[in-house]
Length: 328
Ligand code: G3H
Ligand code: 13P
Ligand code: NA
Ligand code: ZN
Image (cartoon, rainbow, N blue to C red):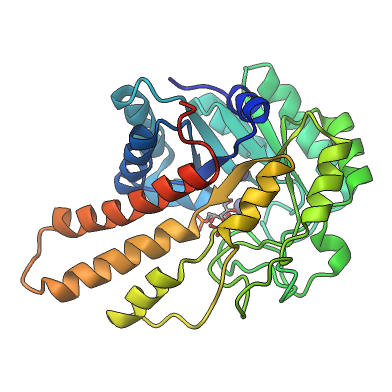
């Protein structure tokens, strides 16, 4: 059944687990996520970005997600809009039937320019008023996502600030978070704690203090009833990078957020964990390998099946690691 993010994450908070929020753009990603959830008895958050809407079109996305709800009626599903760039974008998603929206007022409508605190409060508050009137949950974002190692936002063509960021910007301030929640009434808050979007988060194997876990703890202490969201939570599996490069790809050395550190965050209030890149890498690796190993195959269902299997394995691993499994 389709449920709101608030309902889903309140349960997660009560029982101390996290829920991965996987980005979806097509049938294969949605099937992989749902099959993994079915296999592990997990609740699901699927999220669509502006890029996803451009790629698939809003009606296709909407019906793909609704098809998932129909095929797996025993699995709770939250249909979330990722990184809304304006109240208008959020309004449109609410109208389309999304059960949760993100108003990302930390950046401007271009998805690149860091905005003032007052702007962020004003646009987020507007979305909360609109969404709550329709039973739809709202995620806000405070702070600017950036890698504590590189000072970069990471994403080139997606959502991400331009230029090098200061330590101050890259760590959400706990007092400001408390004021933000009080003024806007958001259900969930995306915080900056050292992660960044995309595959290029860290240039070296991450040390076990690569995330600002102390900061997560301080924020959770100030706003215990607001669900914390960790964006940029892909782990960039080294085994998939190796497969991509073995079968003709060229991806330079790079590292993501270790799963154990995300689990540490979950112990301190992180309830929604955004993952996109890991499924992209697994899918690409599986397709590259399949095509090289089966050069005479040309039925797309064959290589998409390999892609789905690879994505499903990642989803199962995250549902198990985050404690989501068994909570559908
Ligand atoms: O926030 C970024 C997500 O990974 C979505 O990426 O805008 O390329 O769909 P996208
Ligand atoms: P990754 O690029 O680390 O998968 O993060 C995705 C994300 O935060 C989507 O909002
Ligand atoms: Na989001
Ligand atoms: Zn994000």
